[in-house]
Amino acid sequence: MLCWHSNHYQLQLRDLEATIRTKEEDIALLSQYIIKQQRSQGIDVIGEAEPGKKASLLKRLSLDIRKNLFNNLTGETSLSPSVAFPTTFDFWPHLLNDPNSLRPALLISYNRSGVRIVFGIITLAKKNQSYLCDTLNDLITKMTEEQQKQTLIVVFIGEKKFNSVLRIWKLVEKNFKRHLENGLIDVIAPESSYYLEFAHDSMKLAQRCTKQNQDYVYLMAYARKKGAFYIQLDDNILFKTDIWNIVDKLIITDRNYPWIVMHFGRMSKSLCCTMFETKRLPYLIGFIQMFYYETSANELLRKFVQYQDFPTESLFGRKSRYRKLKYRPYLFKRMTIMKKEKDNLKGELRISSN
Figure 1 (cartoon, helix red, strand yellow):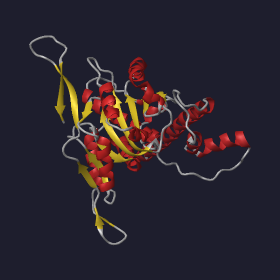
Figure 2 (cartoon, helix red, strand yellow):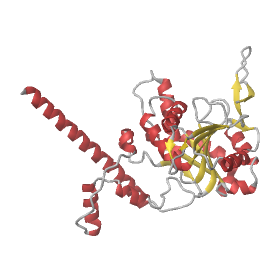
Figure 3 (tube, helix red, strand yellow):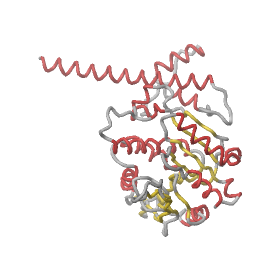
Figure 4 (cartoon, one colour):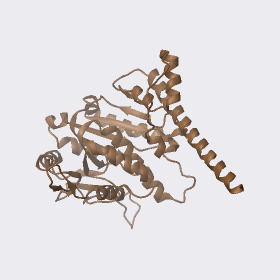
């Protein structure tokens, strides 16, 4: 009898926890909705409101909250029943601690979209020397004006301290003001509350992998509706050749074959120089969200491809296979700082083939 009561109370506790989680999510969504209602739409703004986001937020609220909200606003007494599909808050409940957790701390954009290729570059504050400007300049100068019109470069600043975010933004603005104003470059940075906080510092490797995975998710989520193809880059590379034309030829050549990812460089723990169709990014984003604290982004991508790389029957009875394509020779060189052992010089620049 005692055991039955214990199980009964445990079930009640789980129900209450689920209810609390739903209410917390409602509060976060309503807070975002109110913020977006209060903000006017603009071009070059921080935390810009986008068309359609308000309706999307409302649809994700629980049914009882939506009923009360719509009854107060419109006087309607009934709504069609809805299904509570999982959201980002279910995978990352720490986002519920701040209603602004998914809102950019900084967003500089002229709303360019519908391009052919989106380049995403994650950058961080560097102690010694930053190569972000070298990477951007090299990428831009290797494109024609017509190619630039079909391109968007998104610079993602993965820093929690806003002073560091502003410092990097000012560097980009100083060196690439014309490209910012013509819409070629967007700059975005998340709120510090977007990142998962660890209780202690004993898991530095896990923290680094977790944060990097969160960076990829945020950047891909922003870029996925901007163009047809997405290429992930690091902030310390130089291209050996005209990557735009090579990518364009590969897209045309392989358009009749199903592929998930193309690699243009040696695989490491990052996703540098990998290309995806943006229509596949939501699946990869969801996969990373579920396992973001388990392992590196490269390993997650390998598993993601592995789970989808199996023979499937087509409508005509033929078997097809998703492919992971690798381009040779590698298309980029990585810039690194090599410290000298015999003296205290800051270091020398080494451009290594990767």
